[in-house]
Image 1 (cartoon, rainbow, N blue to C red):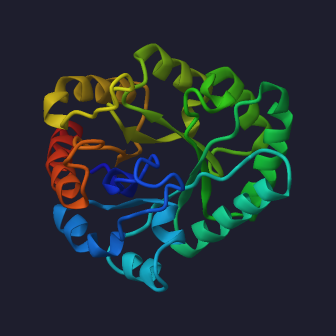
Image 2 (spheres, rainbow, N blue to C red; image 1 turned 45 degrees about the vertical axis):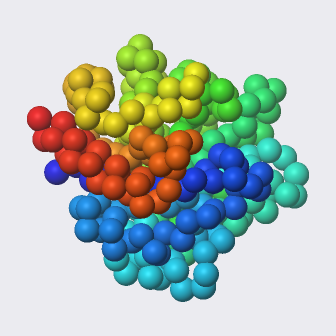
Length: 263
């Protein structure tokens, strides 16, 4: 059975700084961990602010209920001391969370490609030996959005057990195929995200189950056998953007996702 995680960013109303510009979390995940566990999730993809800004003891409390399988990092891969400190902190928090992988994105400056390679390689050396760096390869914010650029960088940095990647359900099929062609052995995870970027809304999975099924068949045919995160759910940026409603929607979406993956 495929492992399904809840991305805690999905239940955070301030995920994009719409409440306070500093994007400080307004949700304490420990208050919702029993409901998340009861829904049947296999673990969490923990948004960095949900542990870095949490009260002392929350990491241990969360880990006692569900694995913090992925650490969702926003570490800076640019040059300079501040960026280096952000990467160091991300590595330290990943270790504290006991995560098997840490999500990252390099920057968007093509002229700094070799710098990203060198800083990424150094950062992986700071991670626990059994922890992988997982490139989100996010469109619009990272030069790794280009599969050929990403593959070129990855080949210089390290093997697939230390440097992995994910794909998104909203990626166009041709882009998904290009990513698998370029570095398919590194793709171990999927972000379930059908966000409509034009109006910033997200559907219920039950309303896009055919698209979800098509994506699942595509990546399965390409050899994917990895894990999945519910990254966003319906209700974001609406009056329903509250943890109670979002956890309830995530619970409903989990049922849909399990059925699709089982099919």
